[in-house]
Image (spheres, rainbow, N blue to C red):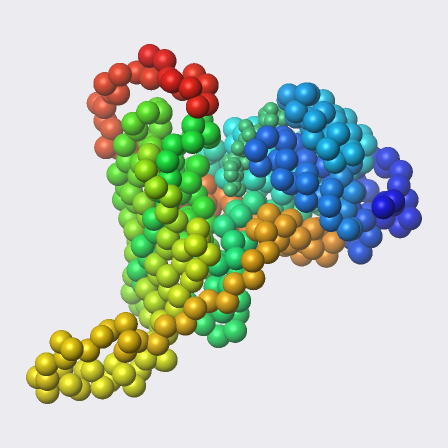
Length: 386
Ligand SMILES: NC(=O)c1ccc[n+]([C@@H]2O[C@H](COP(=O)([O-])OP(=O)(O)OC[C@H]3O[C@@H](n4cnc5c(N)ncnc54)[C@H](O)[C@@H]3O)[C@@H](O)[C@H]2O)c1
């Protein structure tokens, strides 16, 4: 299919300045990807296959990798962001390692190019703030790729919320564990894995950062925490408190990604891997609970009652669309309309700052701590060296 640029042009208009204006509307968006490793190649595939986008090119520090992806999707391979910009792009996914997000994002945003930055926004709150400031000066849109929000089960939960299930969380229990993959070992398990859950938990708390952060964590094979438990507390004033108990490990022998939310009005269990969600609403169980309370008050023996049969359990309705496709659709919709993405720079920054507070709380336990054996990861998947 031949794809033309917006307003009938297919030229190589420099992205700076003109880009955002060209992007608005319903025409073809000119897209790029910087960093085409494990995540970035999926972004390239989606842009290449969408009907209203044209994948102009990909950038990677490894030119062979850029060349392979470019060949696969029939686009150009560029050696740097400057040459991608010169080719003219409206929006770009940034999927270089987290430590490289700031430099790439600053260059793109300064040219008014919209950015979808892989999670986490940056490796530190200081860098995340710099990206947020760059986004505020730019005419480009910035969205952070917290993909779990686009997981079918999370989408189902959000759809429920929109149709009258206000979640007022009081207690959240979150588990995310998996075996070590030897990827993303430049950061700890908090920035690598727990950040997914922090995004969801903070979203459920309306973007409010926790008042208190308590955490414990242990470095086992990297120099960062490989396993961590955090207790986050929100002081909600006259509305009481909410607590989230969040655990993450990259040293487990199994994979589990489960969140349980106990709220004022409902209990919700989300199993991301099984794409299953169950809801027990207070209202739907009011009559049975009243009956049980009455019986207990009268001193009746209810030990024969089967709790599971007593309670009304609803399953969330799942639409199994691919999360990255949904994420990119939302990003592009914001680029076209100029609307602020839900996961904007502020949300990304708040997630990183909370993660950093957790890491700091964890390290407070390590005063005087030194690894028994000093190890460094040599190569992914290989034995480590002393
Ligand atoms: N959303 C998710 O579920 C998820 C999962 C994994 C990783 N990530 C995030 O995606 C990002 C990339 O992770 P990955 O696992 O794909 O890493 P990766 O190492 O597989 O890929 C990164 C690529 O970027 C290239 N690169 C490095 N620096 C560059 C630069 N300055 N300019 C251009 N190219 C450069 C590398 O050559 C490599 O090909 C990270 O921020 C990571 O946290 C997100």
